[in-house]
Image (cartoon, rainbow, N blue to C red; front, side, top):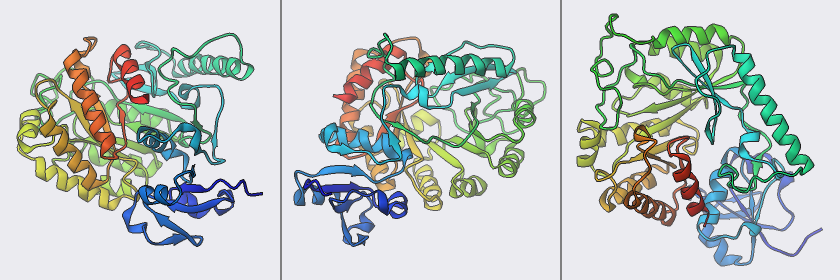
Length: 418
């Protein structure tokens, strides 16, 4: 039965192509951000830009005809440009219930120097560096998750309204098909980098050196990597690389070989000084996500932050990576906000221009290495200005995991929700 209310389907990609039977009966058209689709059709429905769709059907409701991986960003974007949440309809692959994002995600393990801690993807650390049995850690976390989920479903007497994690009222019913999320957070003696970022905590020369010296102190990355390989054999992993620059790692060939053999998925932060064809192949296969660390909107500021004059080369390498990938929506450009360095309009505008040309989402970060210091009022005001510019430009953005002290993060999330 038709309701008589026109519906615009937002998203004319793979999900829409594979799920014709889930489209609403009152569908009038598709809208998509991909300009190459404008003027074409899907199932005989015309495909427009979102602006054109609203001009034709100003009272329409918006049906999100996209996969669950895109729900977060798209709903945030639509609400940010003024579309009421009540007008947005979710597809049958998405469930709504009284719960939180934390309950729907697999926790992260961080491993470094044989130390293990469990963190949440959204709220940061849950248990401080614990040396012990991994299974016991996860049993503790799972008990907490199950208890919270049970209370949620039973609507027991507890209140989550003050929890900044519970920012939205939608949750994917299907999440990344992995058994564990793992991230490396420690500095290793055999972890190197070819940049000299002003915010880096590696004050000695070991991370700048191309040749690793065995006498350097500290745990070895490759030792932990090989432990992980044996510990999680046969398991599905999503691994966040968080140390040094992967493209010049002395162990990159071994790590990439292990990832390919195990079919593991990886998150790769990179400064993009160097283009790595093997990493590009993994990304093209849908098993690698890049965080491109740009942090500037002008060549001069980039050189000041990174220590080298490679702004244009980095943008060229990012473009090359994205050209090999099936979708740029999984990857993101990182902008780490630094007071009195890149917190100005010239850099904001230049960075946004790059993001628009690359059609790439943005991850906003703060100088988390100075925590627990609070952000200054001036810096927070400039950050909100940056956010407003991103919204105006129609660029999807989010904050980096655990990069803000909780109070700062909570306040900024509330500002973004307004």
